[in-house]
Image (cartoon, rainbow, N blue to C red; front, side, top):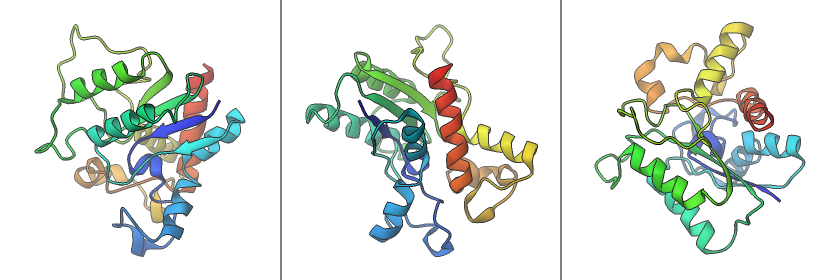
Length: 205
């Protein structure tokens, strides 16, 4: 059994680095890329679960890229039935001029891919279905807190503990809502550890 995670920069670990010069780089030098992925929340979650992990998060990925990455991993038999697969959805309107599917359609397509596998869905920094009329629609029970995000968890933590959980010691990033929703802010190391605690709690009830 292993943990396999898919997502965008919030899974890939963007923001762990302390060097501000890489803030806008989705594909930095390999050292920084490894620093990110080896210290993002999947690493800390796999330690809690005592299983190996594969972090498939990629900075800049939209949800259809995430879907295709999952599909490729399944077709190549990299994922086994007993693996724990966690998908963190990205901003639903990233690459909206090129996307083939609505946010709800990509949710259902991803669920159909994984319905026979051990999987969970989470939102990263923006709710996948925030702007969708979902009344009467099927929402998989594997979609954990579909109206809540990892960002909400971090905002709550910062307010309650007066401690930065954001990259480069940023504070109160929700005051800059436009850039926040576009994914301009990411967790720092503390933030990724808090996310791993949140996911672990959701897995174990």
